[in-house]
Length: 118
Length: 114
Image (tube, rainbow over the protein chains, first blue to last red):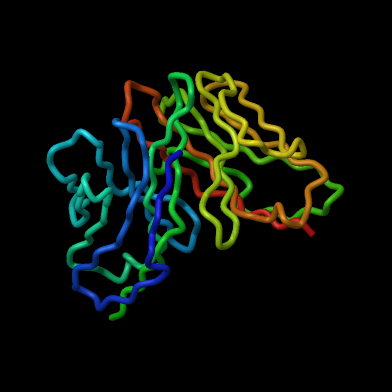
């Protein structure tokens, strides 16, 4: 079974600083995917970035990058030059598998609440 | 992505009521999902529909009944709910492929059961 662990319940960061949100995972699968989502207070889960287990390079999307360390089973999210609008809950998720081909569920961590201070 | 819509956004219901949550995706995807997000708990998968066929029921009580009439619409019918069912219900969709497909979520329905 897949498991995601986010050990930081909350983080406080000054605006314009970089921030790293931790995520470790556990799986026995050889092929898997890792995702980060942002959830503002409005509730919507916003997709940020994806890393496949066979991707050799770390994924980047604008100010977001994923520090993927396969041997350590970690997939930390790095946000550069943080902005006030980055304040939200952040969830790390792993693509789990069903027993048949087709749609695959996501397994989520507990989340980290990020607060950006002006 | 704002291609997944959910209605209503907020719902208050009594334990004897019957209500339905609606989800619609405009992304041309072929899989849709219902997740439940309770306070202080990780998101939990409830149901998955792949090509309109239900492929997963994650031990959800029968008071929750999903319906997927086509690949763009997904409903969650609610009846005789309990106060502990109060939560944020999120719908998502994805395009099933060989792997790596991303799930895109709607804004959610905040449900309060009195």
